[in-house]
Image (cartoon, rainbow, N blue to C red):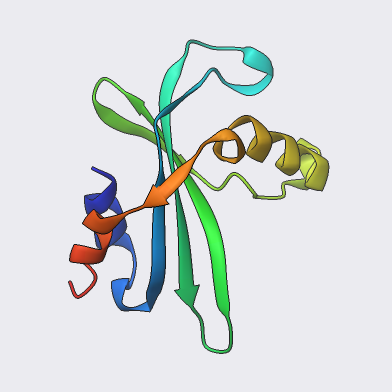
Length: 109
């Protein structure tokens, strides 16, 4: 599901490195909500001038992607950089990553 989502929504030729996390569990902000599976992806992308690495989080519900989010997104209304650091630590920041060869196979598509 994640490979389909990523290949449908971005230029795969710009991806230099991809890693995927082992599945984890996310219960929402401040531990509120029912637990959902979470998987995160780290992508290193070649931009016009520099390489940039960023993360994407995916939560799942009923065997489908429920939410795609940027765990590092800074939203001033939600607490700014501090809130982004807390969200990253509670979601993608606590997971372990390994190579994502399934995405590399789809790089030319």
